[in-house]
Length: 116
Image 1 (tube, one colour):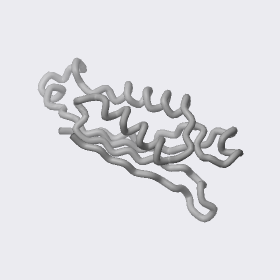
Image 2 (image 1 turned 180 degrees about the horizontal axis):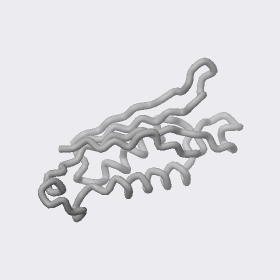
Image 3 (image 1 turned 90 degrees about the vertical axis):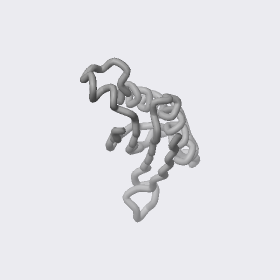
Image 4 (image 1 turned 30 degrees about the vertical axis):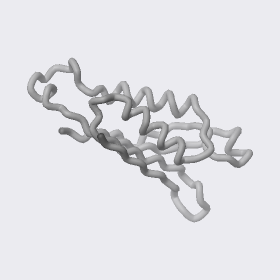
């Protein structure tokens, strides 16, 4: 098994339920951990059949940019569900930060994890 980490993926989206949040895109910072079986990749050193972390990153970017969410919880769950669609994923963990969501805090984040 290997743990693939996608760190500090910065995307702009509509997130929040206040009127100004519904019309102005905000930054969200996404960190993802994906546990997959890499035995075939180790044995063959070939890309056939490996888990393509570039492809899932593009899917996450597209999903987040093209969608609108009221809650961080829903956004986090939607990303996690997208990742878990691939049966090769044994475990995934997603953390989504909303920078400056609170006056005296750098950010607020929601973390969700799922495993098979």
